[in-house]
Length: 110
View 1 (tube, rainbow, N blue to C red):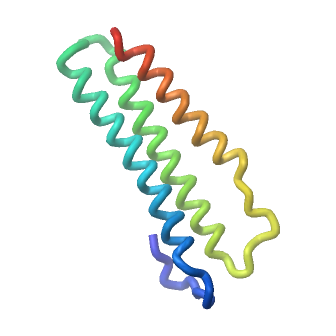
View 2 (view 1 turned 30 degrees about the vertical axis):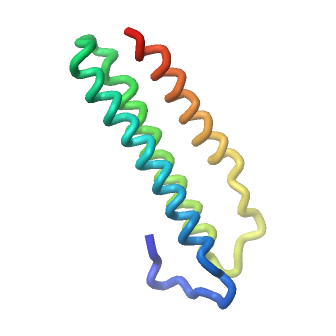
């Protein structure tokens, strides 16, 4: 996710790279969870609900990745905008991951 046109100032450090990696790690973790749920459900349950947790995991992973890309672009602006907090986005990502946990917990015993 490097931007060739971004100018780095002395003292930027590695924070932008760490931030990008953390968003990517979260996305891949959720996507891996969905893949494992799909593989598990292929052998134990044959109803249409078996795709719900995996599909939700894919949607949450994509949403998390897109929020991370958007945040990364915002933080690379020089000078930084006056308002850089993303409370709604962060709450939405956290809420969607919590929803995925609840859906997984409810559908796992079926």
